[in-house]
Length: 168
Image (cartoon, rainbow, N blue to C red; front, side):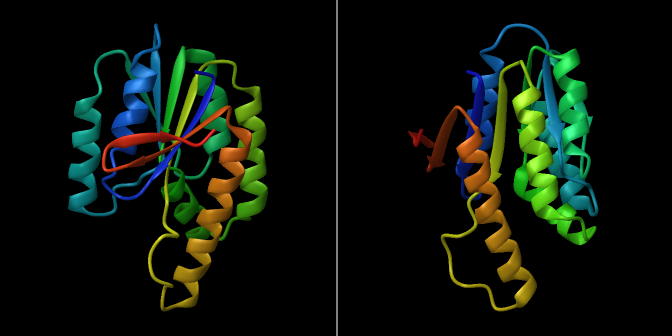
């Protein structure tokens, strides 16, 4: 595994699949989390995910500065998992950051990363057209982000119903 991009819908099994692939690597593991706990449900969700990882894992919080976190983790770990890119995207949009520039900065950091890297993202474009402008922009930005990451990754996998389908 060099750079693995894993995409799928909500509760598709994509995070579990990516975590298993990273845990198959020897040495120290890094988890780069993009989520922020803004409510009790998200706090519980983050705690459950953290409990699912063992003592080999170090956690890096990166709701916005993902490239910096990847650079830092790649110096300290032997394999890295980033979960999730669409949460990072929503953080960028809410902070009114330049999504295209941030994406290209992250892809450059991916290229610098010399340890195995798995990146998880949601596929959000398979449903109905959102009713408001912000939701439509988010769906479009997520699609473009996923396309860019899949193109830059060495391997791309779609997970549906817990089953991985190799795309690239």
